Structure formats: C-alpha cells, structure tokens
Image 1: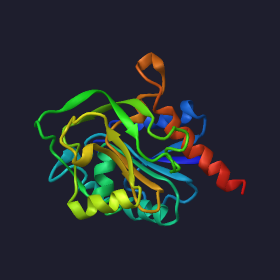
Image 2: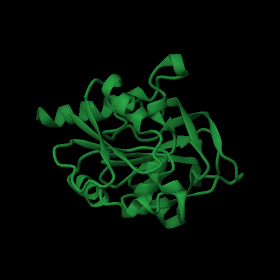
Image 3: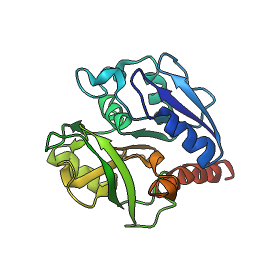
Length: 225
C-alpha cells in the first residue's frame, strides 16, 4: 500500500505521519508537495497537522485553495482513504469533504496534552481494529479544535454514524464532545487528536497504531476480494 503525506507551508507533523507509515506499519510512503496536481499511484492520502500558511484568515482556509486540493477530492470521490489530522481536519472542512467547522477553543487557550477518546464507530476503514466503545489515549495539540456544526448537521452525523471519536471530557467546547468525524461514505476521516504521536508506549501510548493498521487491513481486504 502506498501512502501520500501532503506537505503545506507550515505543516509540522508531516514527518510524524511519514514515520508512522514507514516504521509503524512498514508500508511505502512519500511526502507530496502542496504544489503537485496529481496523486496518481497512491492508495491513501494523509493531511498532517501544523499551521498551514500560518493559519492566516482561518485555520486551513488558504490551504483549501492549494494546487493539490482537486487531487485530494478525487481520491475521496474514488473511495480511497483520506485522513486529516488537526490542521488536516480543518482543511477537510474548508474544502467541503467534511461538514462543520473548527473554531477557537472555548477557553481561548492552546491545549497540548494526552486525552481519552471513546471509539464511537469502529465500522470504518480507519477504526476497524478498535473495539466498539473502546477508550483510547491520544495526544491533542490545538488552539482551534472546537468542532462546531448546527443542530441539523449534528442529527445527520448521528443518523449516518459519522461520529468516529468523542472526547471523554469537554476539553475545548466541541459540540457533543466530538473529536473526529467521517463523511457519509466513511472513507474520509477528520480528527483533532494526533494518532501518529501515539505509536509506542515509550512515548505514553500506542493507541494510535491501530488506526494505521485498520487502513492497511481494509486496503488488503479490498485487494484480495
């Protein structure tokens, strides 16, 4: 399986994701510049955290107009896995692949700590290696991670089982304590916590590893069908 990690000006978690794939699940991975216009040959695309374009205007707003964006949308349309983490989640909402928006934390402070998440839907290609309702420990690092959507959108997220993860406590004011959501087709996931920073118990938790193992397993299952 071949992964692309898109690098924008201001990305700072691209190498974390690169080594999560290279060393975590021993698969092929390349860093792809935001100025590229094709993702041909890749089986999945990962959009890392950081501060694309310095978070000017809104987090992810300028990145949403980068040359690589149509190729990311094409990957999503083809049913291939698209994972956006932190700033990547913000970018996915900006380009319309996921509903809602990420706004400033309700306490107006940057939060950087390991938090507990509940796996709400383990029937996706990102979460299948987790147990239903499993509680996992994953780091967060964001100032604008407060997930917002209107009541109608929230009802749709619930009805379509699009809520992937919830915080176990209210860390930033997110609606319904949402930490991560998918699109209706379940091949696009955006989440504020950083699974790529939770691959080994040596650094506090290895609970993030199963996300990348899930992506790989589901890809192999499709290939072998």
